[in-house]
Length: 88
Ligand SMILES: [Zn+2]
Image 1 (cartoon, rainbow, N blue to C red):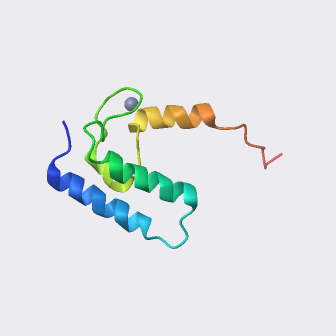
Image 2 (tube, rainbow, N blue to C red):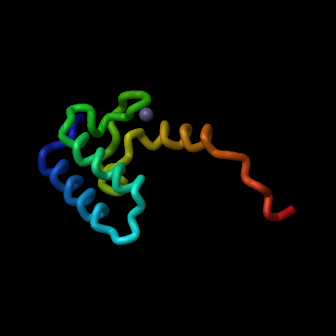
């Protein structure tokens, strides 16, 4: 199900709030700008990988999310570098 207009407005407000943070780095600012543009695209709210709907709850918490929780976890796992073991 696509996002309703009030939901999009709420996400837009959330993005603008995030964009006002003082300690924002350039990459994050860029991501937020792109999300604001993308928000009005029909594809917004659909997972980049599998095309499934991203839940409104997830988008509200993380409005820059481009993947559903499942694909995001997979992507994070695939890109994770081996962490040094601090307990050794
Ligand atoms: Zn997905």
